[in-house]
Every structure is written in C-alpha cells, then in structure tokens.
Length: 387
Image 1 (cartoon, rainbow, N blue to C red):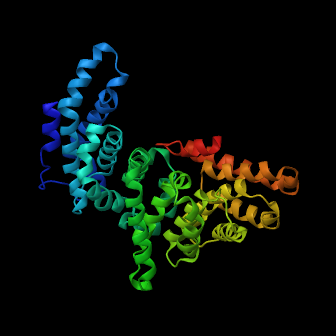
Image 2 (image 1 turned 135 degrees about the vertical axis):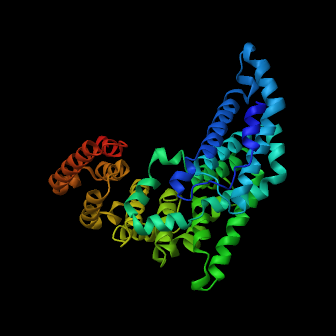
Image 3 (image 1 turned 180 degrees about the horizontal axis):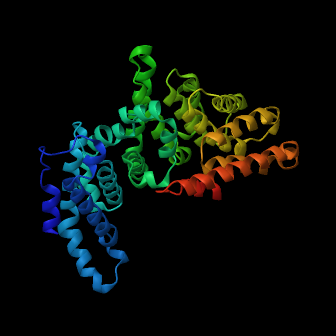
C-alpha cells in the first residue's frame, strides 16, 4: 500500500514528456500512474465496504478502510488539482480518479473527507470537464464521423473524463441530495450569463456543459420538487432556442437534451410539437453530429407521442433523411430509432417496407465489409450489423 501511495505521490518529471498527445498518455510515467490508480480503484470496490465481506477478508477490509482509503482519496484529489490549473492528466487517469470519488460518496467517512472540497471539485474540476473543449472542436471540424463514433462508443466511455464527470454529479445528487439545489443554482447562473451576453461573447462551451448536466440529471429532476414543475419552462427558455443556434455543437446538444425530456407531461402540447418539429428539421442539419443526435432524440419523441397525426405527414421525408444517414454512419442506435417507428406505425409502414428492407440489407453488407477489411477491427461495424 505504501509503495502504491509513493507511486501516486511522486511528481511526474517535466523533462522528457512527449509533446504528441498519443505518445504522452502512453509514456512510462503516466502508464505507471494509470495502473496504480486502476489497482487502487479495484481494491476500493472490493474492500471499501465491510458489510459485503466474509470473515477471512474482514480484517483486511477494516485495515484498508481505516488506514488507506482516505489517504488514496487525498492523493487522487491532489492529482486532480492539476486539471484545475490547466495542467496535463491523461483522460483515462482522470476517468479512474473520478470513479473513485463517485464510489466514495456513499461511504460516510469518505464523504466527510470530500465535503470541505466539494465546491472546488464540482465547479472548478468536474463541471469544466463536462464542457465542450478545444479537442472536441478540432474533431468536430476535421473528422465529424470520428466525433460521432466517440460520442456513442461504450468503450470510449471508459476513457472519457466527461462521462465520469456526469456519473459523479448524478451519484452525488442521488446519494447526497442536499447538493442538488447548489448545483442547479450554478447551472441557472450559467444560463443567465449566457442569455445576457452579446452574441460574440456568449459562453457557448459553458452552455454546452450546462445542457449536458441537465440531461444527466433528467431522472432526478423529474422526481424532485420544485424542479419537476419547472421543467417545461426550462426547456422552452433555455433548450429550444439552441435548435437554431449559430454554433453546431449547441444545436446537437439541444436535440440530445430534448430527447431526454420528451416523456415529461407537457402542459402545452404546442411545446411538444415544437420540439418534435425542431428535432425532425435537425435531421437535415448541415453538420453530421447534429443530424445523428436528432435521429436518436426522435426515438424518444416517437415513444412519447400520443397523437401520431403529428408524425404521419412527415414519415416519407423522415425515412429519406434516415436512410441517407444510415449510408453515412454505422451505428446500432440508429436502427433502434427505426425499430421504434416500425413498431409504432405497424401496418402503415407497408408502402415503405420494400425500400426499408433494401436499405437495411445494403447497410448490413456495408457493416460486414468494413468489419472484414479493418485489420484492427474494433467491432463497431459488427455491432452495427447485429443491430
């Protein structure tokens, strides 16, 4: 244990660190840190809770919790501090540390250690990790297909500081509800600053992070007053305007959030209609990630829709856009949206059935071919083919 802590605490030398980001994260020093954090996380999930333990492990678990769990937390927090001042920490290390923090929330002794620093962790480390950043922008501009793949890949989630940040916030408000009002107040402040700023100074990236947080907390907000009754107003005021944002990633995020909230009880059906129409027109957006997020969101709207006359007239154009997108992107989630529509409309799909099957068959062959040609096949083609 002491050796592990030594490895964690030892500062990484500045000299000799590769500049290239891919080489940098696999550099010996960082790999050792990553493995150590991984091992300590595994120990914490195995021995961090006494009540799961059989007698022969109990003594070790007690010793681990009493002597080391807190010290490991301290080391993790000081590593995270680097992120706060804009320093370098590999994504996977950040992700693992945040997992450790998330697991600590439910244990009182650990939470007591976290609590005094919670505001700094939440607002200066975790929230900035949730915001759209330079790397996202670069990928969005240079390789939108890769941007989409990363956003919807389960394996990527294991390495993503953003996903770990969302999990941390969700876990925090679920297990320690007293933090919810504070966090929502922070998000509301961002919305306010954004609304008041002139177009050229709007904090677009922070708004993106705030929308991500609202999506991540969807379940909790739907169960908690006073937020529960304010959700529709929040969507109309802060989410819907972004459907026509000049900034692509906000248009995508608006569709994504709208999908999460499609199931709430809209007191004004026109708001539901407006969101549905915006998501459908998002399928014709010039930017690929916006089109993809819109298709995924549409699935929720179709499931939540009480009056199919709102969707019927746009079925043909929707299917057109849908098949165009299937030609561009291999993704099993796309097929789930199609499945939902076929399921809901049943017999009415008959006129489209032939084209639908032709498109599915050709998409299937495309997936199979890419799965065969990729030497280092990451199986995304095969997964999409199964879908």
